[in-house]
Length: 88
Image (cartoon, rainbow, N blue to C red):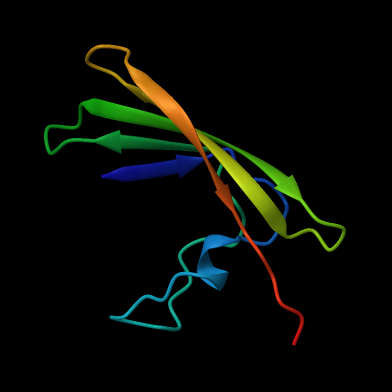
């Protein structure tokens, strides 16, 4: 299970880029989450992802830093995701 929290007030970036093949018009989030907790089938926390975003003047995310920590041993790391927009 995935539990999202700590949402910001900006438009959700992922839906602009990811297609959901089983239901293309599905909207799962309105804003960008700041945290995601992954739990196993027993309800135990396995992974915690923290997100931080940078935004352009229109309020869309231009980058996201994800910091992940595994609960069972405290190991983890971080990576960056960049978003590029084309005016149409």
